[in-house]
Image (cartoon, rainbow, N blue to C red; front, side, top):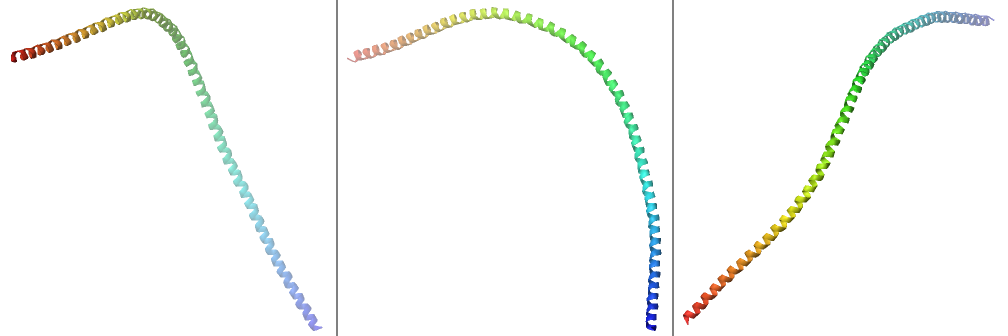
Length: 182
């Protein structure tokens, strides 16, 4: 019985130690959980603060960008208006120039048409003169060719007569030589 009682006391003590150990673990867990909770809360607050700061920074950047874009839009509108007025002025100048050049074109075309008709009429006269000169040239060429042929024939005739004359003289000289030797 004593053994049983010692065993129960040992068991009871072991259970008490186990309960104490579990209570310690529970206290540690509570402390750890409380610390983790505080850490999580501070971490969440910090993340919220950082997110708010990022949002504020981003918002200020976007505001600056909006202001910059507004100023650029105003500048673009001003530039557009200046360009538009310049183009209108340039267009009116170009229209005046176009009118001037169209009148000049009409005058130049008319002058060139007159010049062309004059050239055509002189061309007809020049062609007639050319035909006349061509006919004269052909006539002169025929006369020149006939003259050359006549001169050549005369030269051939003279050459032949000279050759015949020389031949006759040689023949006479030979004959006289033969007669003198006989």
